[in-house]
Image 1 (cartoon, rainbow, N blue to C red):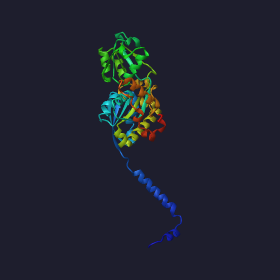
Image 2 (cartoon, rainbow, N blue to C red):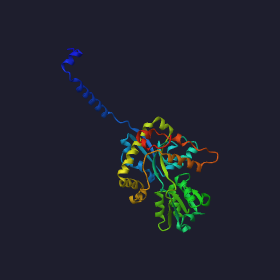
Image 3 (spheres, rainbow, N blue to C red):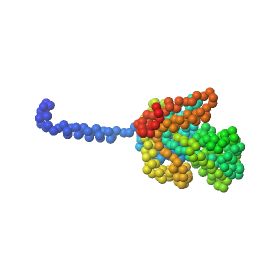
Image 4 (cartoon, rainbow, N blue to C red):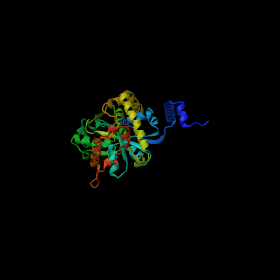
Length: 335
């Protein structure tokens, strides 16, 4: 039997709410069944406490919850994650300190900075052998001092020396890989080195009664920065947004469960949680992109550049789209 529209309306005038409710339920069910798109990504992880956001995100499953099939590749430092991981194309995302980024920018390398993940002003240390005649910072003059070239610990050493009336020309400076420094100090091939954890503690264990450690709180406020290739930023921006969402979940976890986060970091480095907790109060694990970071990048480039090199335009290197979708309040750069 064929019904004209007026016949249906006359039969039941209350049909419209019921139909609309049924359509809404069908739409909701369809949305629930729609599978999440999973994107593969390779992440360059620096093995240092400042990488806590990435470590926690990986341990707690936040990458997979955000729709990422994440492969995490480990590097001894942020510089190595950038130079050996991101720039040759071995990883898609790396987290590095500002100094290697400034160096790469001075060399004309194209990359995008999408967020900072960490800031602190009391991370790095200088550890020295007592039997080399070093009891106070000024005693380093004339001594054999090593560090990792053009990295955060190198810049810290530069500022540390200035604070004590010295320059790099006043020491016998050499450069080596971060993981080789503790053994070099133990064997006596160097008298001191500038580095951060876990290498400072490793060296102290190797020389239990023959070392002195110097800090310089406030001398250098450093950042860890998420770096991606321009291609990823243009062609796979969804991956960056998912990555930052996972780090945002990790940020909330660290804020709410600091002791559990310290255990995660300590387990990764094979140290007791008390070692990680000792410096935890100096760290800020927060997503953002601030004006102080921009100014610091420019200062580091001035320290590092040769006379003919121009200061890179770091503002143009910053890509804000991911943060604008995940944590817009974290952006304080003047644009």
